[in-house]
Image (cartoon, rainbow, N blue to C red; front, side, top):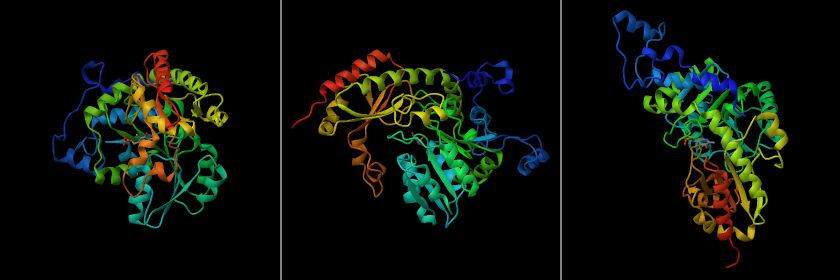
Length: 394
Ligand SMILES: *Cc1c(COP(=O)(O)O)cnc(C)c1O
């Protein structure tokens, strides 16, 4: 069900569009000028909200930030050039040398890289814990500075009991950051579950059309001001006005798109459950998923991203499955109109010292699907052709 309240607030651009324009303006400008010395001095002193320079603030970008903050039910948001820009700034804004982060296993690969390759250079260590084991996460929190959640996790779609974890984190003075890219605020409201900072890859459902790479971090005015004044400003991962404009355009259909992704994904998950060549389906919105009760407590719907594991004896035939698909395209990312397939075995071939797929032992038999907005019967026909090509032996 689309969230009616979110759908309504996304339509309102009220005072932010001059000349009565229905669509927002794109303020494609690097700098903003001042009438006089006093006005400029006031902007620098922070006593006026006059725009100064677009690496700091820009009206089109602020429109996107305003809408995300409203959707997440919080005070403020800061937009970034990518999801990783938002994630790295959010974490960096909370840690100093000697601090420890607690992070769930099966987190997004580049978030894993940030925590295992980048932050240790500055004396920040991370403990990885199975997020489905609430007690284990809470035990790891003692003495930590940040709890990093991704609900559900990448590739495996495991859920965390967010309310239980944030309650424990608060008592220990640990700041909680949650990646909400999969559900979006339409289906999961982390702030209402006690999370301090919500981060997003806006490249996914916020954009919705596979044409933007962007990110955003949302939270209290104090948390967002902290990361805006330092990490955002000095690392420079700003969002362009044009990308912000595309995002505002994409957001308007977010509740509608998600409702259809949810319907299509439920049909695809049920189809996969009926396949003798499938060992396991990982879609927490499906009624027979092991964590479905927790899903029902925390989410009001599911998105179009899910995975399944083929039987062990068919592992070598995953390439034949992927190559037989015509409507599903081989590709990374997700959240746009089109259906996509990504076999986890491909991730094993990435070079480098850290490889999250290998380190988290993601099954080589796992295949991720983004169930798009095409006709669902055509999607199922396409997958049937894939399963026909999925033969063991050899
Ligand atoms: C894609 C993704 C990211 C990274 O976002 P970018 O916009 O590609 O930088 C982070 N978290 C999750 C869950 C993602 O799927």
